[in-house]
Figure 1 (spheres, rainbow, N blue to C red):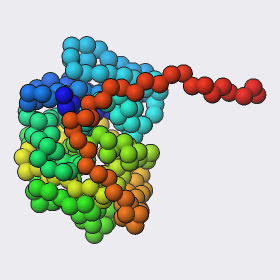
Figure 2 (figure 1 turned 180 degrees about the vertical axis):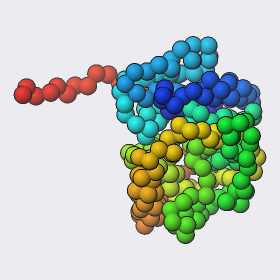
Figure 3 (figure 1 turned 45 degrees about the vertical axis):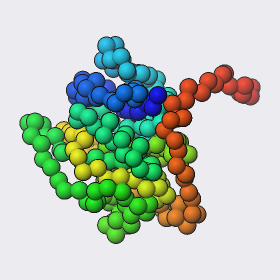
Figure 4 (figure 1 turned 60 degrees about the horizontal axis):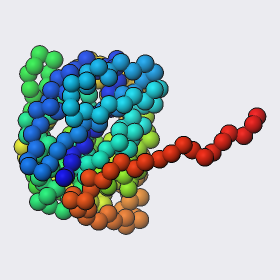
Amino acid sequence: MPVVSIITAAYAPSAQFLGETALSVAAQEMPDGWSVEWIVQEDGEQPELSRLFDDVPNARYEANGGQLGLAVTRNLALSRATGGLVQVLDHDDLLLPGATALLASRFVENQIHWAVGQADDLMPDGARLSYPSALGFGIVAAGVANDWAAERNGNWPIHCAGLMMRTESVRVLGGWAGLPAEDDISLFAALSEVTDGYCEESMTWLYRQHATQTYRSEAWRSRSAVGRRAALQRARAMRSARVQIGAVSLERESAPDVEVGRSIKTPRQL
């Protein structure tokens, strides 16, 4: 049975909207033969969010047990995903009804490795503000998104917080990049350089605007240029190396979890 793994990295100090996010996940309906799992990974020294998932049957919650950062938190969630597709969902954003099924259908219809739908900004007063897509709708050929970014000072034409991707493709590229900012852009730059994607015309999610968003902090904004520069470098390296990723069948991707045992390494006596 094909599975879509929705991945959410959560952080208690800024998770005041997580309850609404949970409702949007619970409202997702899939076609016969498909299912959704919600992989929630909480970052921070003092996890506080597990109670929110007690009554969410498709949620699989785990805490980091330490402050590890966004990229590591997403990768830990990825390690627990069993689906052939992963859908990114930040802990303050909302999926619109039918979003997961619609994007998943594009992978069945096309040999693509990523897809993204349109989004409105959800303002604090509940208003929704739309903005035009920077890409044409339909198939986006490999390299197009990075060419667009290179011509615009390292600004990409999609918002990675709404991405759906093939799980195997994300894993072969190493998951989210170990960067203090723009870890998702760096992953997308590599993936979109060597695979085709799909820009969905329909509205699939809401991007919440609020005062405690990570990208509003001075620390994050000061590191953004470094992250975007690394993303462009990664895209160019992928192009020059002529890396290729083949198509992967969704029918065989709902694999059981890989089991690992205790490490056989023992620390040297100091």
